[in-house]
Image 1 (tube, rainbow, N blue to C red):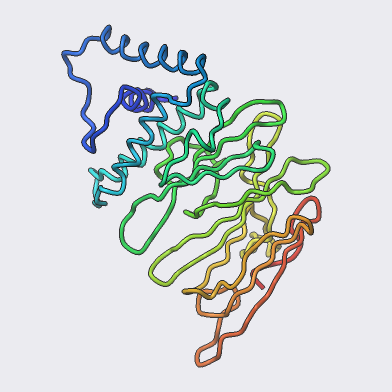
Image 2 (image 1 turned 90 degrees about the horizontal axis):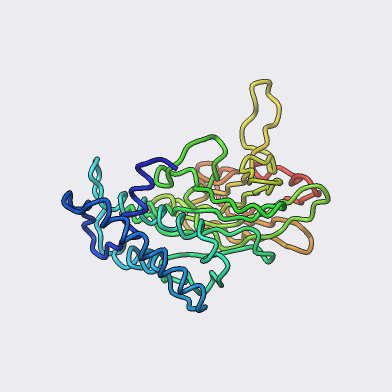
Amino acid sequence: MKTNSIILILSIVMGCSCSSHKKPDKKDSTKKISNKINYHIINSAVVAKNKYTSFPLVDSLKKLFTISDTMQHAYGNDDPVSDLTQKIAATLGAILSNPQITKQNMDSLLKCQDLGIVHSDDKKLWIFNWYENTGGSYRSNVSIIYCITPSGKRCIAHDDSDNGGGAGENRFVANGAWYNNIYKLSSQNDDLYLCTGSGVGCNTCVYATATVIQLTKDSANFSYPAFISDELDNSGEEKHQPYFLLGTRGDDIKDFHFDDKKQTLHFTYLTDDSSPIKKEENEKSKKISRKLIFNGKIFIGNGYE
């Protein structure tokens, strides 16, 4: 973890309950800071031992959410909303790195009005969502992934937004969606999970999305080639990507769901100028129904044609 990230997390752990997060006073000695940190560590250990469901980090996270709706988005370098989003991400990351907390019932412990929590039935894969509070008509969400790999290793990953921090190509392509379902896919050789969600792109743009995450022995792979892309590669051949994105206008998405028993993704939409099959000018909207079937390795079918 980078030094700046550590400082950021420690500042939250020491408890800031207002919307203006001040830096530690220069007069505050290193010893005093260490004492504060040790107090929270000891307190967390006592709480865990006594099986209470209250942790300073969790309390800090909930305090951050209580002020998130009161803040106004401002464009520029000094954006308090962006700063708050990064603090929420850092605090949640610290929570998920604490085994004393993750051994608890996280569904109830982390329950918060503005935090979405969804997990697979086996609780090996979790997605935490919250509204980025961008203001205006664009309602993007931030996602953090928490997973337990087949070897038992616990991994935390941020989405591909600018707020999650970190770097690298293996990032969860969240598309700014709010995720509400995770399904274990039937595969003999791989631990694959399908995550479904939806979002609002602008005043009239809406979308639904499905993305596959692969749990390898010691990590998570967010680049699994599960779906046929709407683009061709350099040689003109079909490309594959980890997600399928269905975008339309208004309420033209009529159905988007995954049938767990049949391992089939169903979707129905009305054609418009943003849908995969476009409506021509002066043409009436057509009802398009498609299904993508998982064959144990990839989804068969092209949802963009």
